[in-house]
Length: 419
Image (cartoon, rainbow, N blue to C red; front, side, top):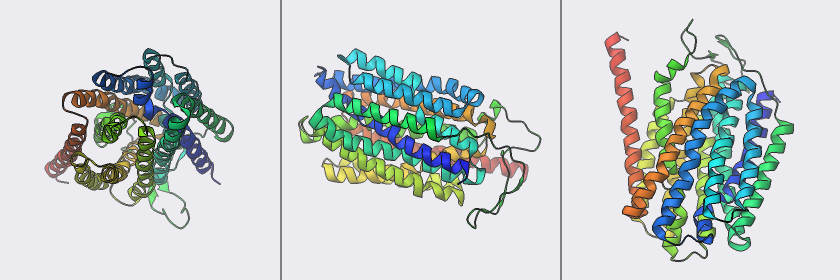
């Protein structure tokens, strides 16, 4: 087996266990806060927003540091750092005695973890350019599978064994992922390919490939992140992280509100999160592979349109089963977008600079992750949780028009230049 494939598959397994570890207990933090004594509904929603926003902001800032370091000292080391820190922090959450300790540990999570960015950087650095969509789609699916299996099993664990036990099990899963990477992943040198034909792989991919994708004689510089298509990619990353995180922290409280009690809410939250995660995982494998043979921006536009259409009923329905069905369908189509964006960024960045570019991607995405729960808290306190879903649909429609705007400008520039 080729080294890049071996790394990809081992990292896929490690990421499943890693995200299972995080997902085993983190989705139930709103219920954990109640166990720690928070009973006022408005204060609870504000704390949920802060505890979700704080690690996002810090992770975004540190992603620039970790991304630059990964290009200098190695990607594998960055993955090991994130996994070990995650194991210690998740275990520490199980020992927390008050809400303040939870907030501090969530901040530490933002500072020292970030396994997905490190894994994407290592995979992108060693993967042939013509297989980037496949590889990044597969590694993204591990994220969604981990976050589906984790809450699903963790929901039953939290319900019957307690939230602290869920944190401890999550810590062990992260440590197992650490061991997998430590002994199974090999750091590969970056690919510096000139324009040439790539050997056919399993009877396909015979087209000429150029890597890195840049103009002849033009050295890559950070100024290029303000040019197309990188600029559009970063803008879309921000909005997709914002929209995907907008309602997520408040789903446990919404399910609790639906059934009218705390008992059983953990199982419902875990089950629904598991189904949504599996849908996202499936799209990461199925939909993102279309990016190897079709125009990625066109695919993103199609997925955005469908997501807007199926997300609107989330605001209207009040029963658990139809709500779950529309949520799962929405997650399926939105889950195929981010791997395509990562592929666009990777294809237009030399392999030796992908660490810093994916670090910038994480920073921008984390700003969306940071703002989403704060805005969600404001809406949920002022209008109610269900209005978060209406706002989410409006945001998806806005993203569609942003893509149209960039495409119109691109067409206009080509027309003026006579192309």
